[in-house]
Image (cartoon, rainbow, N blue to C red; front, side):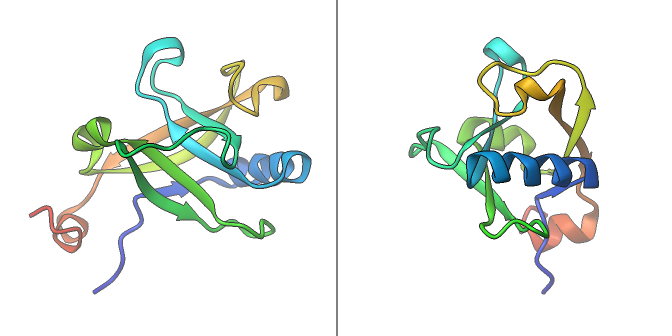
Amino acid sequence: MTEVERVGYTEAAAELIRRLVERNGPVMFHQSGGCCDGSAPMCYPDGDFLIGDVDVLLQELRIDGVVEPVPFYMSESQFEYWKHTHLTLDVVPGRGSGFSLEAPEGVRFLIRSRVFDEAELTALGLL
């Protein structure tokens, strides 16, 4: 059975992640569930955001030129809403959160999404 990716990324996101890793060391993402930045993917130095029992590891992104895998998490309650959805990490112009590493870059990470197709849902055990 083919493994289904839950999170992908654009080349623009990969380029920015490479720069952030070069500057900060290994990084991680947590998909914000609201509050200050709406629902934005937040990038932190790996380990700076405390992952708890209520967080789900969606995937470890393997990015060319980045030695360590880049973990991508979201809260379990948010995952319940998004479990049928493929997420694509992208970058757009604009100011992101002051908490996320890309904030000084003049760009921000953004999630684009699509519902998994029937084959993907079946492989994930969701049908």
